[in-house]
Amino acid sequence: MLERDNRGIGVDDPAGANVVGSKRIFKIEVTPDTTDIANKALPADSNLAATNIVPVTKALTPFIDLAANTLLPNGKQAEKWEGMTIGPKLKHGGFLILTGNDNDYSVTQDLTSNVQFDVYVDFNGGSVRRDLDQPTVLNGQVVGPVPAGFSLLPGVLHAYRASPEDLRGYVKPERRGQHHHDDDDDDDDHDHDHDRDHDRDDGRH
Image 1 (spheres, one colour):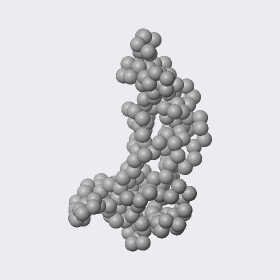
Image 2: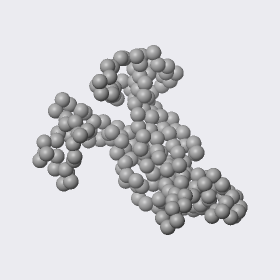
Image 3: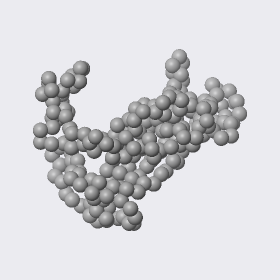
Image 4: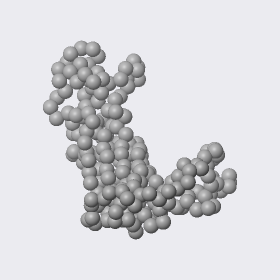
């Protein structure tokens, strides 16, 4: 389960000035008693017991601390980590875990005019706007190129490798009515190093 706040460098806070809270992945356990809430309304007061909802069991300690592993230039944090998937089973018996952030396509919208702009940042508190896909134009007027050292807000992907022990008991999710076929054993894995390795790709788009 990916647990995160909305704080970090992004279109709403291009300086990345707000204090970052939690950006972590926790293990959870779904038991036969866990309530399927697909067609249930959650109580406004969060009192699950009063509505006979049995939640999942959540580990007390994080499995992956994204905030500790996702520093951008000048110690900035990516704002919204919104994607996580457990990929194919690897040759050594572990799994690929892939996480990604939402950079809102580096686009902000003026609340008065509803016009959208690209946002460029320098990771040092500075930001500039330009018309969409036109790095020399603002509000239809040529204003010159984006200053040196500025780039579009980054989209970030991180790949982690979990050992068999890390994900012991993991059950691959299935679509409703879909029969599970365990065909992951043939997936390629060219890495045979330590079990909880991670690679960083801070590529900017």
